[in-house]
Length: 152
Image (cartoon, rainbow, N blue to C red; front, side, top):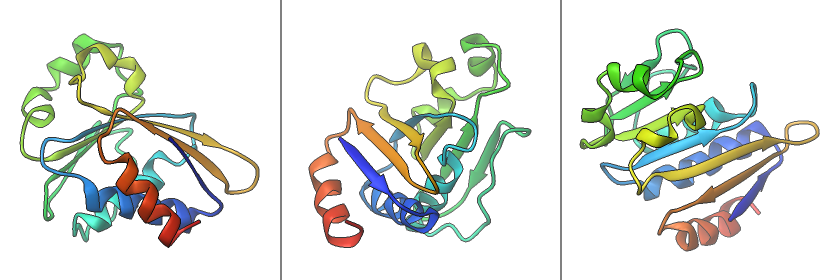
């Protein structure tokens, strides 16, 4: 299912809507170019999880952990060589634990992701517009309804 946002604020709002539907153990596998909006949508997800810390890209630290209604593990695997480096970070507890994992540049470690991972592809368009394609999630119909009420 594809969602379109016109501004950064709408992208954050879509993230909030997604965050309200997430449950412990959910993994979001994100793909998209540099500056596509991966961290922007994560800010909204964090807000819905009652996280008050500032959300920044974990490019240099690889994993940022945040406490909220549900713990959030925000990962950026751009700098990793591949799946072995990913596993060596000790991510299994996070991937199969009681938090929500968001993995930016997930295509680099796809073979290690849980089968139930939610896939999110973010494509920037002109100005601040974004196309956000979400698949492999049983909450898509609920999200579409919320999106139509709150954003569209």
